[in-house]
Image (cartoon, rainbow over all chains, first blue to last red; front, side, top):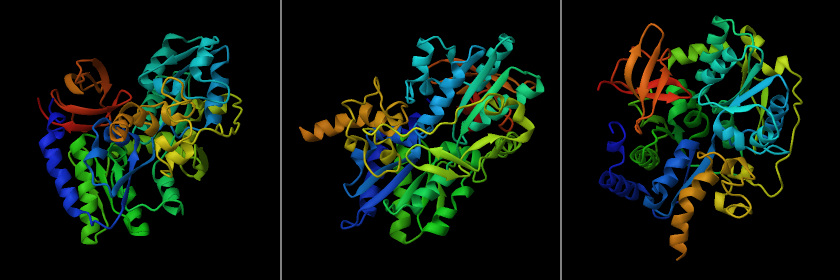
Length: 371
Length: 54
């Protein structure tokens, strides 16, 4: 398939891996963070880790939208889903994220009307087909997914749909990155920038990373050659003593982003003063809520949402995984009590979660190594 | 996803994915989409054009 096959060429991959090997200094350890869960998935699926020299370490960042939702928000969603008049809609991954007393799927099994949708526009269609019920869409995702929610809310307003509400959990990527860079636990040499988020926001919002923290960032696509080339570009910058934002994914990402999408986001959303992230705690201005012009669609304004804070289960180390402090396999319950079928933590739920990606692909390589 | 058929007035396109799944996609957020273009789609909405032409 065009735009895919050419970025999976094994021979080219080996050539780029050779260039990476030529750029690293033998005595130096390089720690690079891939910000986006899509990259984590690609790295394990295609065995990119195996092509890198031992002194180039990839650390997984907080870029999986399902993984960063705290348990309290799941409980809030379940409280809404249990209401008699509500049809609760969300993306498939979200159904299996554990709250303090089960998942949305468990709530569905107990009688709540919970439905999986592919797009918020599907939720709007359900609202129009069920005028006597209230349809709540549990919106999650970074700036990549927020335009879809924004467009849906614009349509709901234009069509005067009065039984459609949104529980907004959209988050923004820059504030958690700043929090990670401020963290004394983590020494990073560079970042693989989130290609899909950048299609919307552009590369400019990441300029603070080289400017304020002296680390390079390369915006990358999601095919194996994209990721390998981004790593090579970061290592070239480090070798040459440069530190910039570069765009490996220029075939899709304009440096200024998608101006139409940004305009819609600015109209429909505003920044929350603060939002809780799993593993990272409360981060200022790191999430979106509906703007005053769209407040009539805000589920949290329409219903009394409990707004509880729940600590993660003690055994679960998703927080450390999300901060890149430990690797998935270093978690005490990884692959034993916590598996994709019976997830304790969010990182094991979504395919973009580091634990799920590692469980599905990476652990096989480790098992081979052990043999 | 590749655009098979475009309704420019309603900003909706019938698209096909690599595994031949067909879906309608909102194209209001991208510049001048055309049949044959390959789109980057998130949650039913195109956010970028990944490639032009058939």
